Image (cartoon, rainbow, N blue to C red):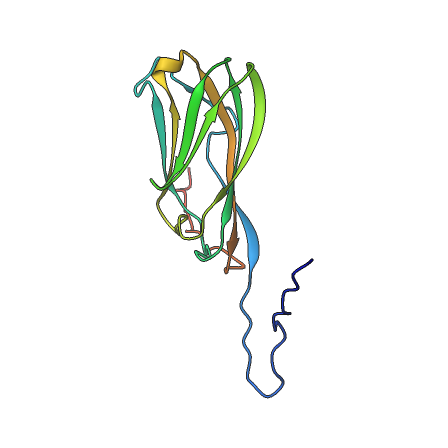
Length: 155
């Protein structure tokens, strides 16, 4: 037995006016993550790192996004990644090594401005984790992004 889904109307009706709305894929790349962040580190804070003021211009909040990152960890490390205080992904590192991750962020979690990613390593797991190459893939309704003009004095 199989279930047939009805075909959804995606073409405009010829008698109704239409408008165009761009939908493009964008990457929000976390600055500095190419070199990686070691947690816990000798610097404050010891067990977590808050990556703040991350913007996703034109994010369509009704669609999911995808969090991408790499880790290198010691065996047994327990760690988590949280996006905007609501989407939390928890992991238990098996054998030590490197691994790439991708996790779906639910619709409505990612905001256009001031997103925060919190990287956490459980202190009782006795492990260290290097988080690197962190990015979020999302759908945007902006084809271009406005950037401020920076003028440097002639020297």
